[in-house]
Structures are given as C-alpha cells and as structure tokens.
Length: 101
Image (cartoon, rainbow, N blue to C red; front, side, top):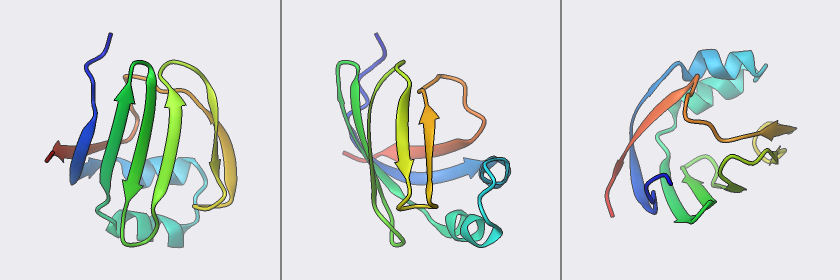
C-alpha cells in the first residue's frame, strides 16, 4: 500500500504544465493564468480514498477519488469540461509541493 499522503502542502515548482494544458486543449488565456498560480494542496488520504483540495487565489477546487479506479472529473468550474481519469504513478505533468503540516 502507498504511504499515507494526508497533510498540507505548499507549492514548490512545476514541470511541463504548459505542454500538458495545451495537450488538453486548454485556451491560451487559461493556461497563462494557471502558470501564474502557486496553489497549496490539502490532502486527506484514508486507505484507497483521497480528497485533494487545491487552494489558490484564483479558484479553490476539491477532487475526491479512489486510487487506481477510473472516475469522472467534473472540470466545468475550471474550464467547462468533464473527463475520465485514473490516478497513476507516472505523470506527464509534474508539480512539486512541500509538506508543511
């Protein structure tokens, strides 16, 4: 079983986010806003269930899912889309956060 990730994380850096957003067909204006954000993450990890709160000055966003199970993510509040997702260990886009609590 993966380590418990429960905690509060501060943004440190990101890699390939613009390419990732462009591949998702996110508008240039929204990509530029996303690249300026330095969101914090608050994670509640209970067994295979995770709740990830993304906290930023632009918009807060809550994602709940079960690790390894495909789910529909409703991104209409972010960019008007819905998409199917599954958590995975290998990432195309990498964001680095430092646990602070």
